[in-house]
Length: 224
Image 1 (spheres, rainbow, N blue to C red):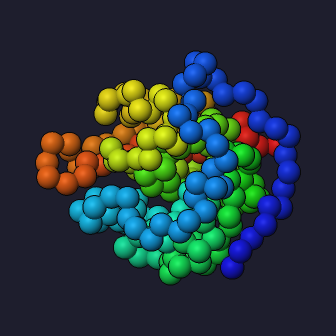
Image 2: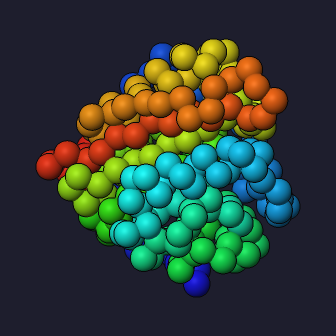
């Protein structure tokens, strides 16, 4: 089931990061880049299982979850009570068997999420955080859409589309990328950010990291 935006809030403030930090080699329309369906996974099977184990450990399947920047696979070992996908490609989202609903939405064009306040118990973002050109604004609206205490779970590896990833991500090392995601969360008003190395680099497969943060008792900066 496709959904259309239901809420138009004021334009978010400028990003609180150094000039050029969020620039990209290819700043053309993302809708054209993501128009062809890509029915492939962007991390290997071991990393996919690690994401699923993390979601299970955190008990995310027991609630209502938003899969942010979603595709045709959501990596849950158990389908959440209600799972909504937001992504760029309609065919990929329609092919995702775990989704109860989905919406096609370009977060770089409009960082405001088309969902009500406090709509979700958790928001997950898997191997996509490096493509956001307005991360504080997007995660600020994630904060608004989370219920108090709800968690944002960001996971990533070391693969990407380099022309579409932001400059800060491309020039950073593994430890610095943890700092980048943590800085995004802090700028968005999310609290209690923690990080983990789920699969250490240096082995035969894909490494994997996570940053987990939560919405506090007050509404985040994206709220009204």
